[in-house]
Length: 460
Image (cartoon, rainbow, N blue to C red):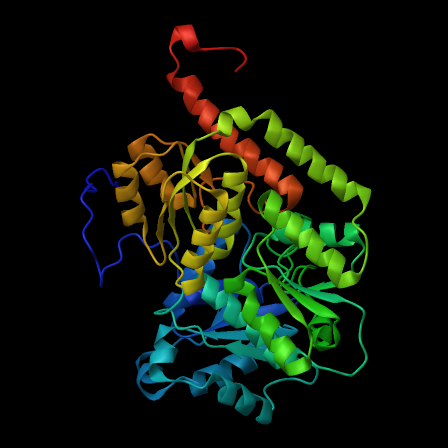
């Protein structure tokens, strides 16, 4: 729907969300499950829910997403879905032979009150789970939280159902990468390897949702975290969780249950957050930062200095997941930009506090608008009242960008109308360079389009 009739006058809305800045929990849970090698996600609910979750992920990643469903009908909707789920587990292992099944719930099964732990245990007792195969699960009611919450719940389900402690340390660091792209997970692994840290990263969708074209279809691509590695997370030296909302719960569970010390850091987006990530790796492993990483950082800092004139005091609006917005906003401040409007649809009391601390430290000459949770209708109203030079957000922002003639950099989930997000990282120093390129290109392209003949320059 075009938004040209969005009013500038802002009125308080307590029970109405217009154009939400999020999607539902099961999508995040399904995405996390795909980061386990040989895993078949299972949606415990109706066929329509599962179809929506699969299609959303497929449209974003442009890769086929396989998942199963309990196929609720009227009977299961009234009397519960235990029989459906037990039969589904039997069918999945018999027909599709996954290494592991990851069950998440939906609104329907949550409203009924199905106990998936009990049902999974019954399937195992009934001999529906073959020897050596695994079933994990989590609860993801769509009427609370967001896709980020669903991701966090599935990650917590992984460690609850699989992590073990043998008493012998494996010499590795657990990294929970947060709700990021497959390319970002590859970049996190690359940086850890450059530092010289042995890691277990979970989930890991690299090689699953950005897999190569080989001419041969694989229902279970080569990527993903191995079940044996997930089991070994209870013996790791430490856990580094990237993002409070998507990753902290799993890390804290490993700390409390298996005494694996955890640290929660921001996603390594931009200069400051990547510095903190590299420093956390260095401290956890007791190593020095290699010159190759210092070189990458230096190139980024040089570029930030070279192009600071184009970013200085430019106003930017950001919308997306809280774990991504925090370091993104910090990066914009580092570039000399003015973040004016920030909206996330994922609830969480810490978000506003983190933003206030960041703005106070930066000494911004104004008070930004921050909504948590908020929606894109409110974002549009803020922009109408106080226009910006750039919008950073997902594909749905294109309507606001077109109506207000504002450059848009697509970032986050979902991105359905552009290419590159699943193969080019936006984390790390190289990812920050790519973000800078996209932001600068978007603003200068608008400048070129609208320049008069007298001001249309070959070199700016």
